[in-house]
Length: 134
Image (cartoon, rainbow, N blue to C red; front, top):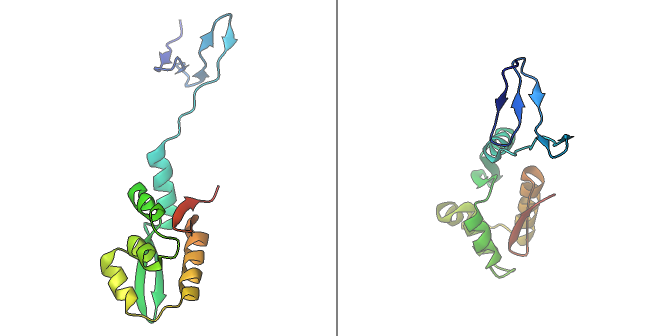
């Protein structure tokens, strides 16, 4: 008799480590269920991108998160599409935004910055909303 280990989904491995699929009904094979591990996927993204995306303005370094928390995205959605200071405050945080505001950054500078951020992180920010490229 073969020693078989079965998981909660009816899938298992025999003593040689070969996968065994659960059977349903009249002997039909049911494919094993695949599970996406969110923590592992996040760790891989952060390993590839780092936790912060940095940019320099007039010799001063600033950083943006490579992943946005849902509460920040919700707050972004509530902004007026023309509220660049609100957008930058949410992304940079108050302390960094105060430093950033001391520089004479143009709207074009900010657009170029957000374009580079989106290109490097897969995050797009447009009309005060955030999404990821699919």
